[in-house]
Amino acid sequence: MRNFRGADCDTDHHLVIAKVRERLAVGKQAAQRFDRQRFNLRKLNEPEVREQYQIEITNRFAALENLSDDKDVNRTWENVKENIKTSAKESVGLHELKQHKPWFDEECLGFSDQRKWAKLQWVQEPSQSNVDTLNNVRHEVSRHFKEKKEGISES
Image 1: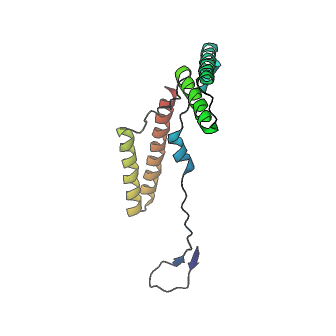
Image 2: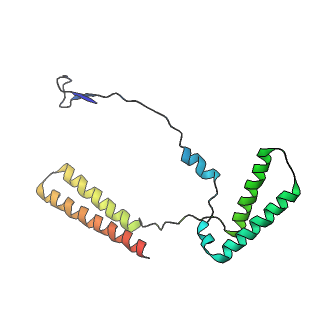
């Protein structure tokens, strides 16, 4: 980015020229996130769940050995993978994402509007009283938001 201060364009602004390089990227993580199932592996720390998982895996692989003698490696791998997934889904279960509690409600919206109004007053008339009012409102709003977030995280 470069600022051309000598350019005369009959305003109080200065001409700015920037070179922009764009690069499009495909999000690999977003695409992989929907394909995968996450298992609740913390349950494997419990002895009963671990034992149940081991029994299911053993039974499924015993059935797989008796079922077929495929020469195709890819098909064999798919069978092994599916057996592991179904055993884990039945005994361990899927990992559930945390549900975040919303803290921004109507009261917070009112505080936010109050802050916008104070800033608008300061922009329209930049006097010392408006600066003090804006700073007080900002402090009050940030204190309220902080208390609201802490209150939700404690419960």
